[in-house]
Image (cartoon, rainbow, N blue to C red):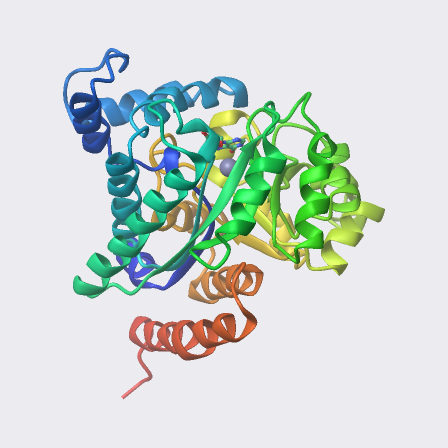
Length: 367
Ligand SMILES: O=c1[nH]cnc2c1ncn2[C@H]1C[C@H](O)[C@@H](CO)O1
Ligand SMILES: [Zn+2]
């Protein structure tokens, strides 16, 4: 598999932060347009600013990684800016071969210039619909849903959960909590999750990225999360003996048996210190053990990545083939916060035939 083939293969993305995926040039232009004066020292070029984000985020710690969002959130305080960022996000993902994406962001972080929570959500949704149209005009089909995130150190999760439910038929398909994990357990937001369950709504929880098994256990068994953001530390409940035989503890067995989707983000994990290398990333073992693993970007700007790059790195480190890519992609679509019939249609009418064609192209039958 080369990078071009990986780019052309249809991909599905469940974990991508809207405020972590801006084009560097857009950050510069929005800062200028809205008078954001706090951009970091950089060489004045878009490439230079992109490098600044990637280097500053490459800190080995989640809290320091998260500090870089000050500058993206800083330029996303007006409806026009939110619209632009969302439209470009859809275009960029579509150009990278993503056919289905769920993009997340925290509305409570975009109120500094006086927008209301509902206005934030409306601007982002309009941006995504515009981005879908532009992508289609360029020949790239994409469908984008949004997840509303509440910040786990703050106290607005119930309000954000209600906001998400209010917009459920207008582009919002789920809910999430994000931010520093250590010290802010999921049960801090139990009221919000219980409300969402009563509303038959869907949510994922960032868990097992910068904290261990208790975080995953709470997310699943107290809060009732449909999926886990990252979930790396589930490895702490898997024992691999000298012969390579794996024994699952109770929680790991539960995660695998119940087909709990893990939204894994390899490059982001290298930067925050949640993983040491692509080779030793938990995705390798978890894929072998048939956990419901998916591949994601997390923050394309901070991690200087794309779905194509994630799969290219995984191909180099683990030898994944088009077959594996199809498996990851179907895992993601099966786990999407999307109606069952639409998931099936994407899988059967679009993804499988496309991989069939790509395989035939990559190794044509003998004449
Ligand atoms: O990987 C992450 N873990 C926890 N929080 C994160 C991660 N990536 C981004 N965030 C935070 C920073 C953003 O401002 C917020 C909403 O997208 O979510
Ligand atoms: Zn994340």
